[in-house]
Image (cartoon, rainbow, N blue to C red; front, side, top):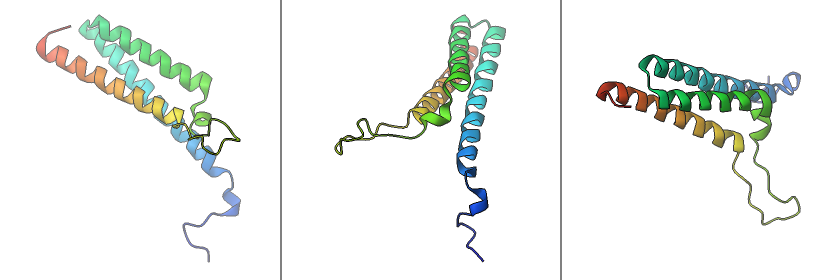
Length: 119
């Protein structure tokens, strides 16, 4: 009996599919959060946050529909023949971290503006 952590030949190719689905779920979560932030900012009449939330929603939607984030998640060297070339950071992960950080910052800004009546 094979160990539970060993690869099964009948599941070949399942990991890339799971990775792609994980990327899609992550981006859809950021997309939903951005839409909710934008709608809440409209209700609170925080127009600067409406514009920023709409921009984030558009950027993540473009990334999700057009770019295909799963293809960008693997780091590759800059020059194939150059052994000294350092790998570039995984672009997809970096963009997702920036999007989540921006969404969190906008959410905190909205909460503080409501608490203090600014914006």
